[in-house]
Amino acid sequence: MEKTEHTPGNRAHRRKPELLMPAGSLEVLKTAIVFGADAVYIGGDAFGLRAKAKNFSMEEMAEGIAFAHGRGVKVYVTANILAHNGDLDAAAEYFAALRDMRPERCDALIISDPGLFSVARRVWPSAEIHISTQANNTNYETYLFWRDLGAKRVVAARELTLKELRSIREHIPDEMEIESFVHGAMCISYSGRCLLSNYFTGRDANKGACTHPCRWKYAVVEETRPGEYLPVYENDRGTFLFNSKDLCMVDHVPELLEAGVDSLKVEGRMKAALYVAAVARAYRKAIDDCMVSEETYRQNLDWYRAEVAKCTNRRFTTGFYFGRPDEDAQIYDSSTYVNEYVYLGTVEETWERPGTPWGDREASRGRMVSIRQRNKFSVGDEIEIMRPDGRDEKAAVLAMYDQEGVPVDSCPHSKQKIWLELSATARRYDLLRAETAPSPGDAGAGR
Image (cartoon, rainbow, N blue to C red):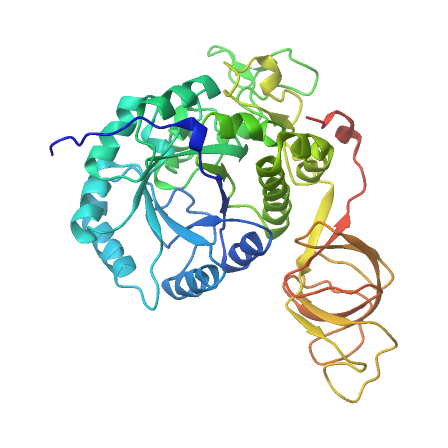
């Protein structure tokens, strides 16, 4: 294909960056959108790199796309496995199904494999294609290569610095987009191309079935002394050789904008709605404040930091953005998460007037809301209503009813639909969460 001429990008006239959030289920997709995402990326039943995620059936995908488009939000579908011969015919059928989806299609495909790229271009020529970070996109010639083949956007390799991103922006057309991960789990291997899972368990990380052996605890065994484990003396708890901290760039949004990044991407299609809501809300406000002025952003920096720290995390690092990570980017004493809050459920329905949804039973007072419970809690507990606008509020659980209207003291069954009477008002899509008891290991969990 003949190369096209281009004008290098002008960072003085950058667009407001997109906030791109993950969604592993329809519930999480809706949460991401309500809490501030400009776009979400999802996986179907095949060809994405999160085989253990819930993923989307074609029916769920259609519902999710309609929900997103109705709110001006884009949906990108991942097809970023490293394909083998046996995958190609099925991939062609999959792309055709996405092409023919009605009433609305997804906004782009995320692809890493050149073969799947060719299949997608042949089956769905008008599709917008984004090149996944799995393709190891580390220089501007790689960006231009994919652009000349028809790609609209390239996701930067996680090993790039801000200086390198600025150089890429200076050498590519302004209309070509740079997407870069700014938050979430860091893979120990180069741009996520890891063989450890396949070696240890036969489950291929490059086809979506990673077992995360980078989080396992390791020891040394000398071959003539089988069964005798020799510790690596990092500390008395053992060694976590590959256990990276999580990426967090909420402190550095102005630098990302100055570098010319068009889409700020959050990792986490395995994450629950609470994580996605908290991270989306924090980065949404950080981006919006930064577009007002850097002074406004700096004034609210403590709030962004506090919000992302409330999410499940493995402590934080800035990854490669400011140079090669040093020993502080690893966690040596544990592979467990820091978790300040537990997710109780998302408000699905509200009951505005006195009385319960069953008509005859009198409610004592307050608004009634329904959720599908994700973790057990009880009448009398203090919980928190988490709102998209950031105005969270403590509330007491005054009463609880099962789906038939029978009063209950607690909700022990996961995904059980229950009605709650709360001491404060909650609205549809608000999240309910409760603080967890601090653990001894939390003291060192800061950024």
